[in-house]
Image (cartoon, rainbow, N blue to C red; front, side):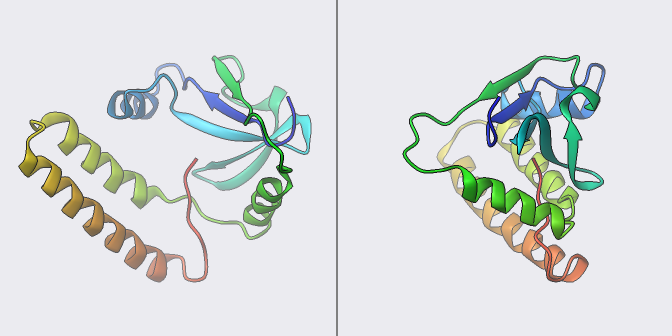
Length: 149
C-alpha cells in the first residue's frame, strides 16, 4: 500500500450495522479508511472519532479489505494526507446523526416505488436532512466538522 490508498472493508462478521449499510447502499463494503504515512498505518473515522491504527491491530483485518488507488494521478496525494492529519489533530467527532438521517432517506428510497413523486420527495428529504445535520452540528459540535467514513 501507498499513503492515501483507500481501504474498503467488507464489514464485521455478524454486525447488524455492517449488514444494514451494505443492504441500504447495495454495496459489498460498509466501512472505509485511508492508508496513512506508511503501508502499516491507516487512519479512519469511528464512533470514538478519528483514529490511527497499525493495520495488523485493526479489528476488521481478518475480513476482506479492498485497496483502491486513484490512477492516474499527476498531483500529489499530500493534500489528502494533510487533511486527514488535521482531522486527527482536531479530534473531529463521528457524525452519528448524519448516518441516522441518511439511513432513513435510503430506507424511504429503497421501499417506495421509483415514481416522479418519490424523486421529488427524495430531493425534499435531502434538503431537510442537510438542514437538520447543519443545525445539529452547529449546536452539538460547535467549531467541529463531524464526519463518517
